[in-house]
Amino acid sequence: MSETLHAVSVEVNGKPRSAQVPARLSLVDWLREDLFLTGTHIGCEHGICGACSVMLDGEPVRACLMYAVQAHGHRVTTVEGLAKPDGSMSVLQDSFCETHGLQCGYCTPGMLIASQGLLNSNPNPTEAQIRDAIGGNLCRCTGYQQIVEAVQLAAEKLKK
Amino acid sequence: MKAAPFEYIRAASVAEACELLRRHGDGAKLLAGGQSLVPMMAMRLVRPAWLIDINEIAALKLVSVEKDAVRTGACTRQCLVERDDALAAKVPLLAQALSWVGHVQTRNRGTIGGSLAHADPCAELPLVAQVLGARMLLRSGSGTRTLEAEKFFSGPMATSARPDECLEEIHWPAWSWRRTGSAFTEISVRHGDFAMVAAAAQVAIDGAGRCVRAAFGLGGAGGTPLAFPKIAARLVGTRLDDAAVKDAAHAAATETEPGSDLHASAEYRRHLAGVLAARALREARERARTR
Image 1 (tube, rainbow over the protein chains, first blue to last red):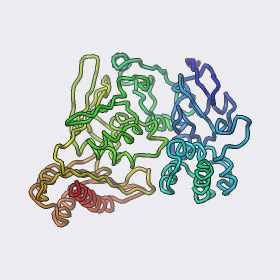
Image 2: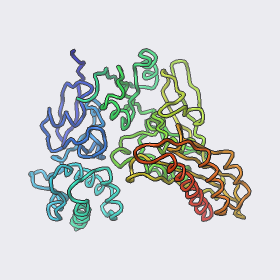
Image 3: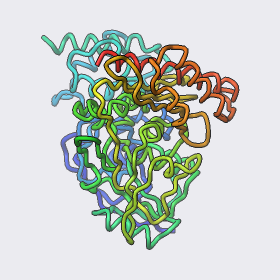
Image 4: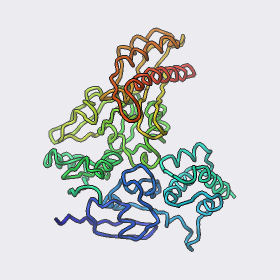
């Protein structure tokens, strides 16, 4: 059967992107498979693991729990959009490297989006606030401790 | 693509959403924040023929703090309510409950009305609605009607809203006593997971420390969120000492008929119901005393 296609215009990482999409195409599938922004990962595809987190109008959301058609007229920032304009790593991304805040890397894009979202609204988070902010993101490698340290280190560096 | 195919339409107004519901009947579902519906569609537990997106209807995103109540639109995002200090001062139980709802990412997208309409018996917002006696304004093509929470929740994942009705607004009553305190607590495997059992309480006391009004309830302990107005009424006139609170909590737990699953047996849930109801009542009492 042929499905109805819907026109979407979305600002993705600062660039206008337009497409025709079937309604049931999730935002994360559109980002990865049509825009080739494969930095955003897909884990559970039903809103449990947080690997697919992106920012919608500046706030972290799960990209598997939105259809691409719903992003029409909105701004999306993926992990690719966190890097500096010259492509080098952001302060937060560097901090993840320094503290060994990742091992296999599967959860990392979601962790980065969740913790950048926290730092944007709260530049001086407590450890409890960091743990709360990444509470919706599963990591099976690190035990979370180094991720918390990465966010603490980034907050310190950003204060200077 | 995981969901079964559906036709999608973005409603521009509540009237248009109601007209679409009337036209497509049982085959249509309203899409609010999608934090419950989209996973259910991904697992094909739900396969609507029509999905009516109400996220772009500005009129459904209202937050209005009034003298004796707070009104929220059905599509108001949970994160906005969580961050609203004026709202939290008026109906603190709502803000307290929200910190237990999912995670940052789901609260950024999830809506107040979506959680109520989904009517999960262990969800936090339906429990708050039940305890406070929130009123739901439902609109259809033929007009509006208001249902109290008690009448709105009809069973597990079921409400009394007709298929042609759209939840438009929720009216959360505020208590006028100065010394009012409330509390929300729950037990789950990890914070943010579905509650095994949740408890919410609100009490008001006079200058002498006597209870003038009490309300409390339990989630995850039956097919709908439960409130216990008759047991709560017995607390009025007491000093809400630990023994009175424990008696009330125990009486409520005895009335519950929780189910068993992988995470907890019915017996354990009933035990939690008594413990958590007492804990919520004590915390609410302490907050009332310091007001």
